[in-house]
Length: 79
Image 1 (cartoon, rainbow, N blue to C red):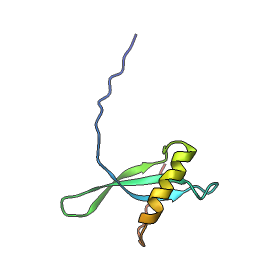
Image 2: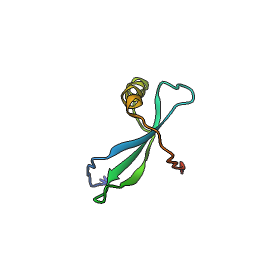
Image 3: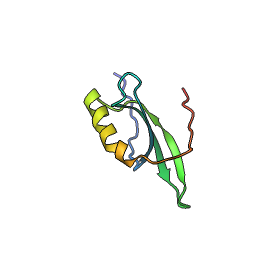
Image 4: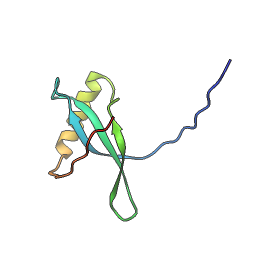
């Protein structure tokens, strides 16, 4: 028997962007996460598309939509 041991750590990241699903515009497709730096800027830490169930995706969009603001920010999706 072989066991693989991996470290676990947590990070308090902010959702700084999101996309909606083309097949369901009432649900989140992916999230963009960032950390606040000491200088007040934001450091992007990555994307995540593994959001949860269909209902969780809709609920999350309901929470995020009222918080959206105008931005000229662009982040290319890689991978």
